[in-house]
Length: 111
Image 1 (cartoon, rainbow, N blue to C red):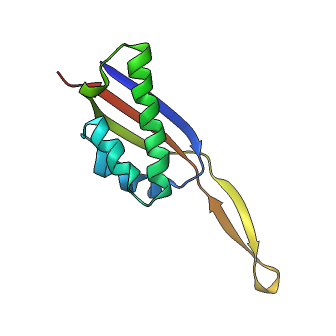
Image 2 (image 1 turned 90 degrees about the vertical axis):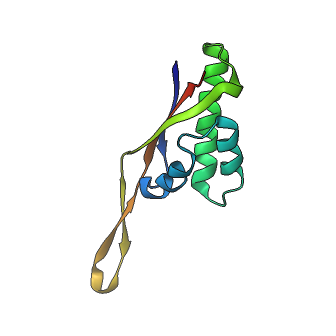
């Protein structure tokens, strides 16, 4: 049975969030959390939190065994973009795009 956790409006660009995702797809949950723990990236911390939430959902809502869980899929989608500007020379302005992301973590029990 698939269990998912959705984290929305995370203030990090999807491009930066997708890096650690490829490393942990298909891993056992315990191994994935261990890998994320030692990655020196802001994205790893965000993904670990969402993965822990998915594990908690599986354990409490569906009474699944945590040791059997595996990361089935992680989807990173683009959220809304905040548009800002930075003043430039000669009265001009340069656009700054502050991107956000939506993160969906799906875990599944392997039997």
